[in-house]
Figure 1 (spheres, helix red, strand yellow):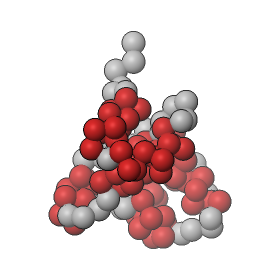
Figure 2 (cartoon, rainbow, N blue to C red; figure 1 turned 90 degrees about the vertical axis):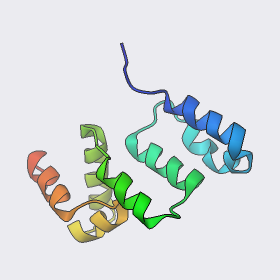
Figure 3 (cartoon, rainbow, N blue to C red; figure 1 turned 45 degrees about the vertical axis):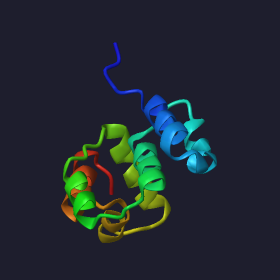
Length: 108
């Protein structure tokens, strides 16, 4: 049994009801078979933006990342040759989290 929320359905409903003008922008992500954590973050940014700095900071503290997403972030870092500070800024993470993940998953 899968306990994860159906993010495709949730975001499709939000777009249909409140933001129909943003459907075309989000369609590429929503057409994927499975949505990763990074896809969900991207959808959230597209739909709601980042207006309230305090809310963004608070919500960031509540995020958790699955192993697959951590590996995607580390692969992104390798692909674009970013250091820990740059990748931390890009994904609004702590440099320490990046370093810890790289050590845990033995990535150099």
